[in-house]
Each structure stands twice: as structure tokens, then as C-alpha cells.
Length: 145
Image 1 (spheres, rainbow, N blue to C red):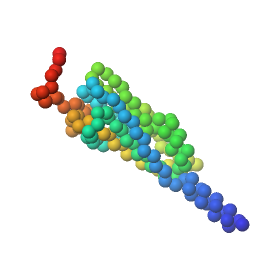
Image 2 (cartoon, helix red, strand yellow):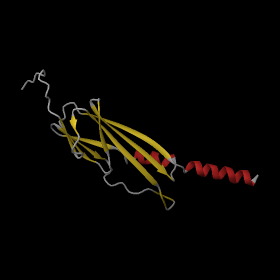
Image 3 (cartoon, helix red, strand yellow):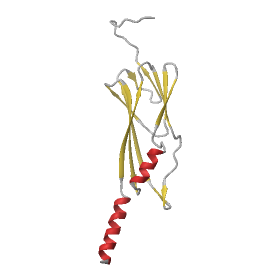
Image 4 (cartoon, rainbow, N blue to C red):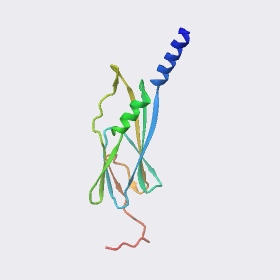
């Protein structure tokens, strides 16, 4: 009986503190925006896509943590990106600029975060810190000043 209890306890402990993963999506409307600046606390990659909005996909993996730890981190805005709008410009910025390390019972939680930002095709993404919408070179477009 003790062996069954010990085995069950070990399994619950192992399952509770395994690797957990979550993908978080955010999108930003940029209809009249010509410049997007990035002030993010984590590394990120930029990719073009056929959409009309900016889509941010944040993939979070934690080792040695329970799902409730990840849920708390998300609720506190640890991975949230805010948009600050100007005239024809928007700045995407991390809600928490320098996230502290997670510790549970004096043990560091291993946290791996990948941020992928999907940008509409008409943006020039050569400069990773600030992207701009390419000028409209379509001669059939009628511009009204």
C-alpha cells in the first residue's frame, strides 16, 4: 500500500512540474500607420504575411513549473505587448520591460520565450527596430491631397 501511495505521489509531483507550453496571440490594426517601432524586452523575429494587421505570436515554454505558474505570469502581463499610437506611427512595447526570473521553492524556473511578429507584405523589414510601409508605386492608385 505504501508503495502505491509513494508511486502516486511521485507521478503527481512529476506531472505538476513538467514542461508546460502556451502560445499567446495578439493583433494590432495598422490601417493608417506608416511606421512601426519596436521596444520589446525579448528577442523577436519579423516575417511578412498577406494579412493587413500585425500579428504577434508568443510561444512560452516553462520547465520545473506548474500550469498555475504560467497562468499567473500571463495574468500579470509578463508576455503582453502594448501599442502606443502617434500620428502615422505606432510603437509596440513590452508591458514589463525587464521581467524578473521565476523562482519556485528556491529553484529557478527555466523559461523559453519565442516571439514571432507577422507584418503585412507592404512593410520594409530590413531594419528590425523600426519598419516602414513601402511607398505605393501602383500608378493606378488615385491619391487625393
